[in-house]
Image (cartoon, rainbow, N blue to C red; front, side, top):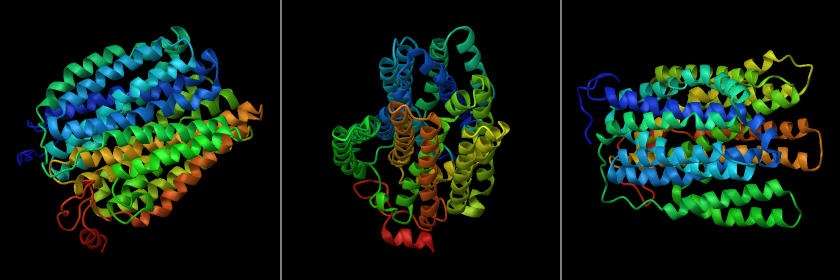
Length: 478
């Protein structure tokens, strides 16, 4: 689809409804994400089985992997309306299962259903941005989507804490169902006006590979969580054998080796989300279980982090064309590492509680300036008609990073719990793992593209449909 040259702003007549619709959809996702993170310590105490704490997050994001890839393929061939409405309906079904769960395994099952639906939403939305908005407006649109987290960030955690206290935690899930219906009614008509633009030369997206990646990652995390001398190595090995070859089919060649250019950008996105969300998932548990604060205070900590993320996102929107993604992502990851270290210090009672607000604001600001530049790079390098494929690759790395991050952190907490150790040790290991991975991301950033678009048009895509030729990459790097 040719972008209308008359579109001068996000609220121009040609994209006004689309801007509002995408913002509303992201607002729904934001309410769910912040609410569940806030109340999960309460849910865990009620349903028991803290060993599955991390799986509440990991199961959601592993199933999102499949939803992202399926949505990316359908967005390229059929337009945005179908994957979005299907994703929202499945998301709502998962909310209903989670809200009525009698135990933690059923809650995890509900999160699997919910995750598949949620994964369909961003891939369709990002592809719509690539097709409907001119390149100069895309940074502002991503910043606007980050701003859609402001209202949920301000009221979501506190509201979730109050609902859990007065009505019960189940209504945090069930209360989101009306918002799903509203999002369907408003967003789907607008996205349906952005048609698919199939590329006949593009290879089909291997959906089976996405399923294999999700299963492989699940086996790996199960092996880490069990921590038994017999089954754990077997599960980890099986997960690697099943997941790694499949992952290589879904990302640009050279991604796992951090090859310069787009492959390194895709890898860095996973390292970024691993580091931040492995810590973010355990901020409420640290504050409520170790420092014995209220759920409301834990929610406020997530709120200030969300506001910092939005601030960072707007900063990158104003500076991305001057500094390029390489610089912004490097600074952002460094701030995430600093925030994780400061948050880990809260495990000692001598550290004042206000440090939690400072620490997680720093981490939130860091991911805010680092997150969107990677998405912009993928869109800038995508061929027309393959925006869904390109953004699905980045989103897959994104979600896999979250799933593995929360899962590895959860495994550390579960192992210490199984051996009746000090819970501060498990949480300390969780924050340490997150910090190490984020630091690896800092080391990879010199291999990122220096700008969001190549100096020359990307070459014909290979079987992955995502990577420019080596010559184009070399020109971009100079």
